[in-house]
Length: 284
Image 1 (cartoon, one colour):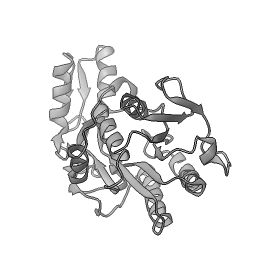
Image 2 (tube, helix red, strand yellow; image 1 turned 30 degrees about the horizontal axis):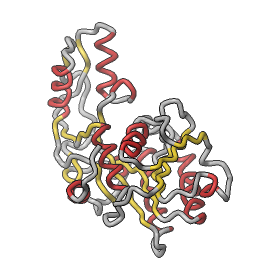
Image 3 (spheres, one colour; image 1 turned 135 degrees about the horizontal axis):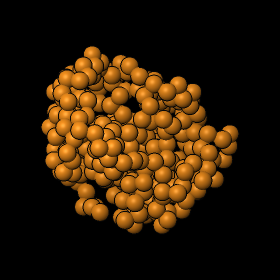
């Protein structure tokens, strides 16, 4: 790993992007931070307010000719069936293609376990993808398109697949956010499913560290699952959350049926990310 690299982060003002930029800067990395909303970006970064979908063939030079591009920008990430996912997918592809044509040698892109769709058990880099949401379809299509584009190029390509993210819960749209809102409104009960489904949870802070350490090395590439590698029941996670925050609200189990397309248990294979974590001496 080398600190003498410049990292361009798109979506730098987003839910995850803010944490990633801060960790890179704390490590002494030069960061070019791009976003439509730049108000939440660490001021130590070189902040550029720029529309990455603008038709600009010189986008690589315009954005500082970085050594690495960490592409995290995405619209409506919390709204899985928004048609904007399909609308902008090709624009993401075009942006990355133009960056590569300008001279970019490493592209790292945020993926999601929603590319996989319904699956029971562990997800590895070869697990077949059958997404059931527009979000999953668009992300999976972008990944497949980039794999074809980069097949015979000497470019480092990393697809950083995230799982179930929590932490800084007032700024996302997870179940934890909804519970906070219900507690603040003074509600006594929170309608819930059975809570038996098991997922791979990771804090946004831990996820940001895994992302940063992945992009700052180039030996381990392809699909990298950024995850804990261990499934935990939704019931255990939420009950722990209530206890930690000393909330009075109680879960109303069975108020909602378990959705038929939610996996009973799903988690990521974390062999690659563990190798990356073990092989680095960098920590914030």
